[in-house]
Image (cartoon, rainbow, N blue to C red; front, side):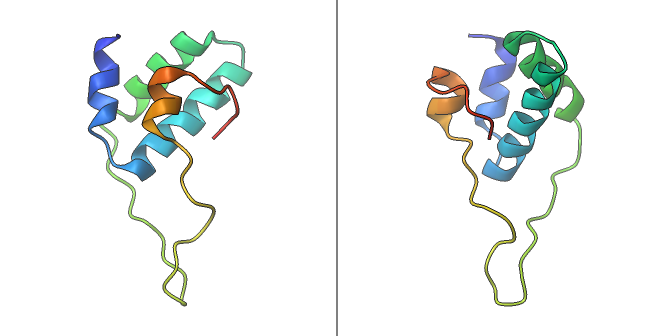
Length: 81
């Protein structure tokens, strides 16, 4: 396991989702999945935590997070998150 993956495991779910989306963007630009994940980590490692946006009715804005530990570490699915 790469050392940065243990750090990602400690991140909040919204932050892991943000990392996963960025890694997907980098992979779509031509990086290998491993290089994309590592670069996304480097970009977000010291970035501030983004606050969760709540709609006026009290529910979270957007779709539910899909970045699960199985996806992040098992690579069971190559679907974008």
